[in-house]
Image (tube, rainbow, N blue to C red; front, side, top):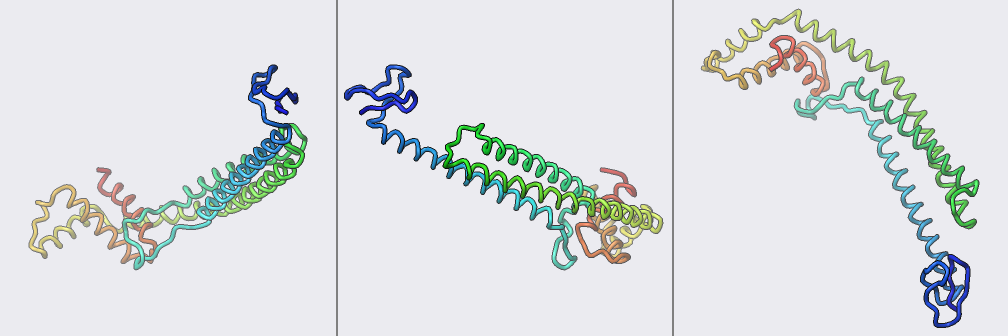
Length: 242
């Protein structure tokens, strides 16, 4: 007999629309229940897939946080970008906050499902409770681990800032803008060029290159990206920003 799952009513043969809600009728109560069960299974599968993708995204983000950018002078170009430890510390703090929010949100979702507040069938309730609960616990664990790493990174950032300031101060004390240009003029003369005829961009590049050469020669700096960072800071203080 035609059946309306919304109103839980059966009708005589030939009726296709529920007289109470206006919804389409299923051919029988059994087919309506089978369709409902299939819809719940699809919803459950979609939920699990979304949770799995969320978990993978969080793990990938955690892996990226754990990777410290490093390079050697032989293995990376001087154009690579150096990420300061202070910036990485701020990123780790933001990630910890994001994991904390996600963990609390998924645990609340698990609690709501367990309490029966959400319209979830009894057969699906354990899954909708267990999966968010596990993900919430994992998020909180990653949050704590990230916070611990951020604390160590904060100390490393302070040490790096101190080292950077010391290197820049030592360089500026040992070299001057006049001395740098004099060296460039000498090099240009040896190459048969005229220093005064160098264009602004070419002059800037030669100054950058000379500062880099001095830094690499005078200090044991294994990371070329860090040399780039120091070069830019020194250039701006020695010659001013372009």
